[in-house]
Each structure stands twice: as structure tokens, then as C-alpha cells.
Image (cartoon, rainbow, N blue to C red):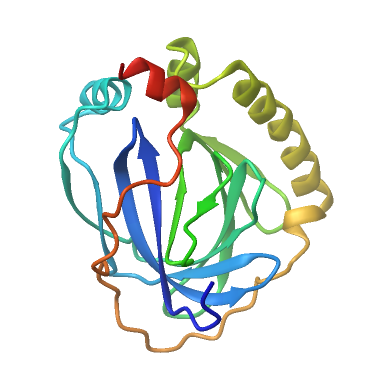
Length: 215
């Protein structure tokens, strides 16, 4: 694996296809892969006209990709192998003020051999944690729908439900992923990223159930 990576592409893979792809700047590549989401960065994501269409596409594996831009916040994301969530620290792009932790529940990342791409799949459930420990759930309706449609395995569902309680407790105590690490950011001028030419390579892992569904 390269010791001098600059950009990695994080992708959501569903039914062996790319659901979304976003380039991120590497900040640290040790026990955790820490990456930076820069406002204005261009990625790709599945296109749909509404919630019903998004869900239909996700369930069926039939969609087209279109361009999408990273939102106005600076996001420092911490990826750790084997973990069923990704932790993103959100900062105001102008002042550098730390705004919140954004927890995205997802399959443990699989990193390609050259380190340039990481693959996962979002569970369509997020938790927002404000400084001080106040919490807000996001997309619980999507999560409940996906669970009802059996789009994730029983083991995954059980793991996520257990993590929900653990993370709420850690947020209240200011411990674990909410201990204050990576919550300081000095604003600097950074150019938005574009997707590198390796963004659409084949996925390295296809979920076994999805593989059977396509036979």
C-alpha cells in the first residue's frame, strides 16, 4: 500500500454497483484512515426524483449515476476497519468552528490493495451529536423501511441496533468516538476535488446475499 496517498475515493456499493462515490483528501493513514471532505468537491450518486424512486432503485439495483457536490461544511471522517459506522466531524468552512459529529452507520469498509478506493454500504441511518452530547437521529424512516424489506442481514440489523445504544451512551458521557479528538480545525484554502480516473473500478467485495439475488 502506498505511503503517500493524497486522494481516496469512498464508495457505497449495492448489488455490485456503485451507488455513490466521493473523493476525499487523506489527512492520516495509520490505525485510522482520516480523510477530509472539501466543500464544492464533485462526486457521483444515484439519481432519483423522490423518496419512493430512491428506495425502488436501491432495492432493485437499477439506477443511473449523476454528479453531486459536497455540502458547505468541512468534514473530517475517521474510518476504522471492522467498525459498522463512520464518524465525520463537521466544521464551519469559514470560521473553523466545530459543529457536530455525524455518525453514518455502514458496513465495515473494504480497502482496495493499492489504498486508493474504499468500499462500504450505508445502512441509511445516521446520528448527529452536538458538542455537549445532545443527539438527533436522521433517516430512521429509511432504516425501518430497509429492515422491513430485509435488505440487510439479521446479523447486521442486530449489530446496528446494539451500536445505537452504545453510541448514545458514549455521546452523553463524551467518551469513545466523542472524546474530542479531531475537533480542532484551522481554516485553510483548499481547492475542491474531482473524481480521479480510478473511481469507477470494479468493487472488491460483493455481499453474498446480493450475489445470490442476481443469479
